[in-house]
Length: 178
Image 1 (tube, one colour):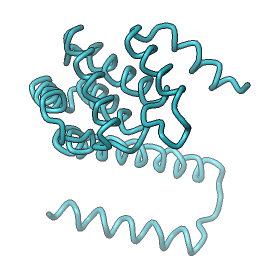
Image 2 (cartoon, rainbow, N blue to C red):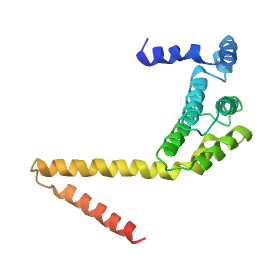
Image 3 (cartoon, rainbow, N blue to C red):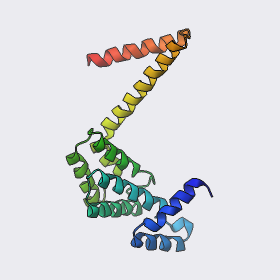
Image 4 (cartoon, rainbow, N blue to C red):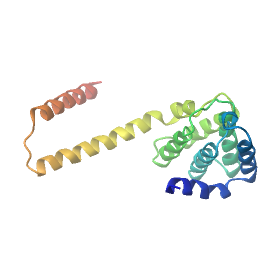
């Protein structure tokens, strides 16, 4: 077994009993008929827990959200096993003060209450833009570090790199005018 599988299996006993029972029932079905998997429950649990740790959810809200996400998997509103990771990004956005607690609570409640409201909808309605900008900021910081390293090493600027930097500078100038 690989390490990831062992870590995943170690989390199973920590799941609420009702979900462990439900997973065992799923395993009795033919593989082609199984809808809910261990990964669905673990991903839903991790997402709900991340939001509770940032005070977006209460303990009851955490369980309600986990239940709602699992229902979304069962009803195929969600078909991407790792979609709940977008909610972990929401929790990080709250932690970095990029998303207000009010907005995070609103989309969490909507996920719980509205069966057709997807995790992608919640992500788009809350943290998508700030998450994109945060990733872009990190990319720019890495680029600046690489340029400093290039300069420190005394490398000559290739025409291709110089052209790429000119295109980037042009784009930055255009964006700053908007």
